[in-house]
Image (cartoon, rainbow, N blue to C red):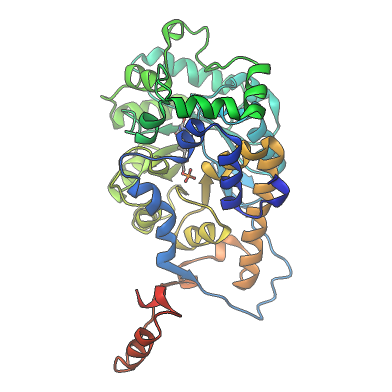
Length: 409
Ligand SMILES: Cc1cc2nc3c(=O)[nH]c(=O)nc-3n(C[C@H](O)[C@H](O)[C@H](O)COP(=O)(O)O)c2cc1C
């Protein structure tokens, strides 16, 4: 199987699974505890349907939008994800280039393998840096200064990672630090010769933003999880976030907001974007899906900040449902990580253009030529409305459940 045989993100996921040693695939693919939130992120989109409309003249289709102070060509941006070098030797560089080519925002994680400075110089595309508030506030200020100096356009504060989530797939494969790989995991590294060759013959693995940084304790850095648990400050408050917003003084997103109350507070302290997210189901298992929280948050924010949704987006139709429900844009994590693992920059480029094409095609089928025209009137709740039919239709469908199982369920 090659990237040319991948027609959607599920195909890319299958190819990523083949290309990666299994501990790495599971690290990327997995979520916290029982993974109910992880699964719910995608399945929640089935709760509503997109209404087609026709004969509406959509010869002048334009799916551009503006978020985080930037006009982007299409309403999907790249979410920040750490240690991309594990998934492909081109790592973050590949994703940043593909995002710039597709005319959208690239977000660099604090935990990246490529530095703020290098990504700043790599492309002319719009860029966001994802930051955490560290116990050492001097280190946080240092990141802000470096991000400004490197020409990034926006800052995104992640607030849902005060402690690392419980990812049990990693415990089972031994993808913990220091690694405790099982025989099966070791065999998987040995048999993925292409990955192993590229990994061993390219630059060494490092957390590039922290390397040589005495403040970050880089010299005694053992792992990402150790870093999260030792360096991130679990005592942070809204006042700390407000101070950071003032320091940055530009487009600023708070990432990991899941309630209307928190969204309002973020707007009150000056956030210009709310990132509705449960960290791709990797933190609090049992939390609702991001999509389920979206309507309340959009209503509470009432246009005072951009709303960006992430979690579970695997299709253009998911993006359209989120936009119609109240988001201004969506962001994707695994949606570019699977393609990265499957085929580096070429994989990401192909996947982004397919996702964009899905959005454009569906907009045409919905008779809608601008994303700003997507609203809740374009959605309906899934399932049959049989009011007025005296239950006869329901009974008929129940008899026909082999043909229409999902509708009846
Ligand atoms: C492998 C991986 C690493 C991630 N690393 C980070 C990170 O460093 N910072 C962060 O704010 N979010 C991180 N996330 C969460 C993403 O930014 C995003 O919220 C999530 O991937 C969205 O869900 P999706 O993967 O279903 O699109 C990570 C997600 C994955 C899958």
